[in-house]
Image (cartoon, rainbow, N blue to C red; front, side):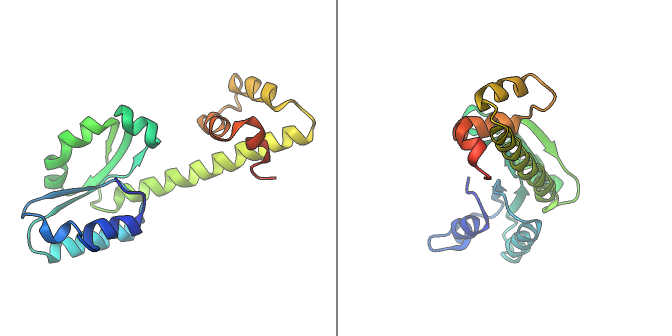
Length: 173
């Protein structure tokens, strides 16, 4: 699994790229966070190969830890045939699998909305903790309270574990 468009392009079409050596009928599961336009363009390039290479647009959510545990959320779109051919693999890699109608690019569109919300939550969590620090509140205690109140979100916990409470409070200051 690669992270972005540049890496996906390199793996598929760069030096020693995979596409030129794929056998007819191969399926590709693209689980990178990429634009819907990139996925649509990739599908068109694969169709131009005339080797019936199937593409599934399947961005993931959950990070490295959940990937290792096989508990990712996968959002998948593509042709019915491509989804059928890759269904068992997608199911094995995920805890939650969402099939989105609309062909390649549709799943990446859902992922874009998710990323927008993730960014808003991260920024809000950091700003809230910075505000608490400016009010001279003990951020560790503040975090403990927020964990058990309506202001809690998964992103608050992730930010705190990734950056520590001091780092979370200072992230956007």
